[in-house]
Image (cartoon, rainbow over all chains, first blue to last red):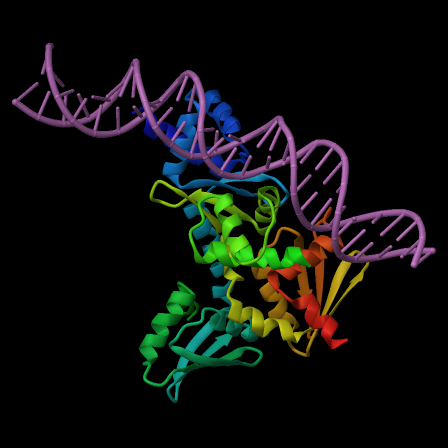
Length: 160
Length: 160
DNA sequence: AATATAAATGCATAAATATGCAAAAAACTA
DNA sequence: TAGTTTTTTGCATATTTATGCATTTATATT
């Protein structure tokens, strides 16, 4: 089908280059031997979930909302995760070790997630005390950490 | 300033309810006693990084880009603002003073907003250097900070 | 305070996008 | 395959958004 091919091409183009208006995308497609009208493009973009958003420099660009979001998220998380070295339980609390100087930032990040399970955190230089709320199990807190910092437990394992 | 108030109201509205077109947002604002024209709204939305994207059900909605939304947690804002003591310009850069030990967290928060205007930050113990991107004015960075940390300039004034 | 500079805004309108409708293409059915 | 239904598309145009320009408002300077 012509449509599927076009959808794929649109996805590719807008994720690789900055497209400001549909007419521009139309030309790019034509260059690849795919042609349609602006009306069709408008419909296709909606179907792809692609929208026109500010590009930060005063202009606009098309962007796949889902893709952009998930990739931005994972970048953020990748920056966070590697700083965590270990998580151990002690006296019903969790002690998280980070690389030096990163406890505060990491704790701030954890607090920012606003999870119910975590009553609070206290951060030193490379150590964070995570205090579970009463009635919450350690296991629940681990699950919760995995939500805030996907892959964190794997990271730790691979360092051991 | 009227504008800051409006920017905040816009952020709040589009993150809480589904807004399909600017005229709709215009009416909501009017309902809150804030009035402007569609032209101004268009400019404000661009400044906020808010775009009109498919809502998944065949319609459209306005949405803040992901990085901005993450700084949207109003609780976090309240916790951050009081730690900032001063912001001064020096050599085309901004120097932000915080209460002792809070520079890193604050800088982390600012970085997290992912604003185009800010090329990067460097944090010591109670001082943050905010480096504007080339071509961005100090005033633009101030506006941008006001978006990330609403009320920050008022806070500083009231401490003087 | 008076003047100079920059920022914000509204108006009118240009630019860009979305959509109703009819035609064409594709998919399906007996 | 001929007929039927569904999907896709283009055309024309309505809807929506962005912007040049002039004016007002705010900010800074002397």
